[in-house]
Image (cartoon, rainbow, N blue to C red; front, side, top):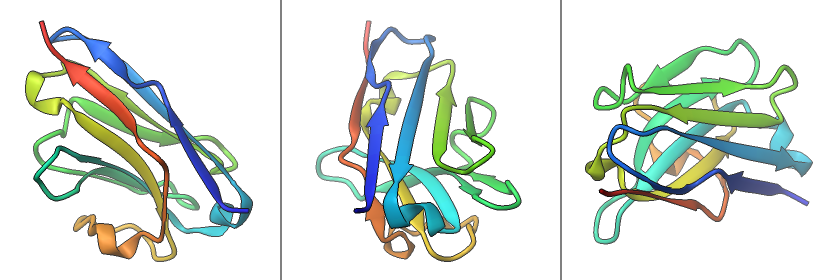
Length: 125
């Protein structure tokens, strides 16, 4: 059974930090690329950061570079997103995903075939 489960979302004040974690199990552990995406109502899902399960190569969206850090455990079964200096515009539902191809800088949601249920992040004073 394929399963992706996100955790770590919540409410935080501007400038604060959160760490999101995605636990993966089942056949999804064979997928080559792990990623974090976010979506707000009425907008398309956008890529934040991706990491290759094998060699650990990472890609970041230009808008988040320097504030967000993606990492994985040694077995590639857990992928995390450390978010710092959060801004109100970071408010969104955050999803982890797994795809069969190696990660690319384009972060196209269509290239990911397994998704978690999402975890809400709200940045507000």
